[in-house]
Length: 434
Image 1: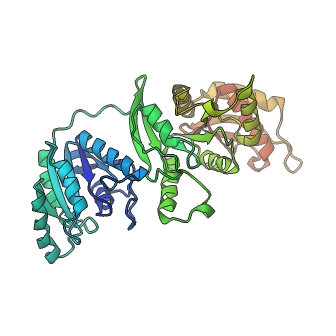
Image 2: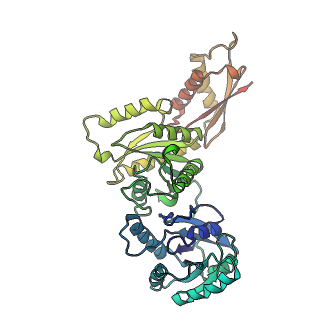
Image 3: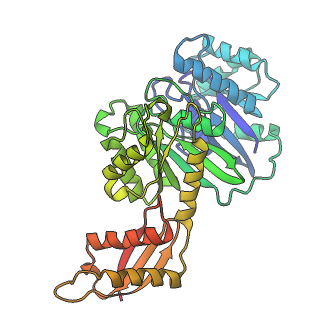
C-alpha cells in the first residue's frame, strides 16, 4: 500500500488532518504543542484508492531536547518511507522560520510534496494561502482539517500521484498483541527489540509514549500486529489532559487485542496497580502473558527465577494461570521466547474442545467432587458444551444454576485448565437450566 507522510512544525494541525483523512480519532489532538511524539500509522481510502498515512511529531531543528531530537529522527524516517508528503502549515500565522526549515529538508527529496495551508476557515484566509508558494516545494491547498473544507480537492490530487498498491498480504490469523504496563518499564524498548528497528521513541523519562502505535511483523510465517501503548497508571495521579487521553487509548488497545503482554520492571517487582490492570484485561477475556523486563539487572542466585515466579503466582491468586517470561528488552534476552509464548496463548484462546472429550473429562471431575446442595436439593450437571472460542465460553447444563457457588465454579475452571491447557487464557463458565 502506498504511504503518505504528514509533516510540519508543532501545532499546525497535523494530527487533526490525520484523523480527518483516516476518519478515526487515532492521533491525540490538543492545543498544546508537541503532543504527537511517535509516528502514528493509519489507513485512508479515496475514490477506491487505499493508502497508508503516517502522522509525525512537530519538527524542531537544532533542539537539544531529548523528545524533539527523537521526533526529528522519526520525521526523517517517515519521509524516507513515504511515497508522497503532506507539508502542513498554519495559514493563520503565515510563514514561519520553522516552516522554512521543514521546506528546506523537503526540497532535498524527489517525492511529491503537497503544501497544506491548514485552518483556512474563511475566504480571506484561503486567499492568504498563496504566500506558501514561496517555499517552492509543491502545490498549495487551502483546507480546514476541522470542517473538512478543501480536503476533497487535496485527495483528488494526492491519489493521482500515488503508485499502484501491491497485492495485500493475507492477514488471516494475525495475532494482535498489546504491550501494557506502568510508565517507564520498557514497553517501547521491547517493541523495538521485537521489530528490530527504532519504531517507538525511547527515553529514560517516564510517560514518553502518548499514542498507541501499531506495527506489523511476521514470525515464522505468522502475522503479528504489535501495539505499543502509553503507560498505565492510577487515574488519581493523572493531572495532564494529554496523559488522560493516552490512558484511554491504552485501555482501548487492551479491548481490541487478542493477547495483552503485561510488562513488569523486574527491579521493582509486581505492584498492586499491575494486578489491577491484569484483572481488567482478564475481565475482558484477553489472553495474558506477564513479562519480567530488565532481568539482566537483577542479582541472581540459584533458582532466583523459580522463587520470583512462585512469589508472583502467590500474589496473583485467581490469575495464577498467567505464564511468566523473564526478559531483557535491552539485551534482547528471551524476547523471542516471549513472542512464542504470546502466540501459544492466542492459539489456546482460539482452540475448540470436542464435545465428547469435554463431557468425558468434566463429568468425571464432577463425579469426583459433587456440587454442594442448593436449598437441601442435589445439584446435578448433566451436559457440558463449548459454545464459543476466541475467547472460550463453556455452558454447563444443570437443574439449579443458582446453586453453583464461586468455589465450585473455580474448581470446574481448574479442571478445564488442567485437562485442556488454557494457560494464559481466561475462560468463561455459564450455568444454564437443563
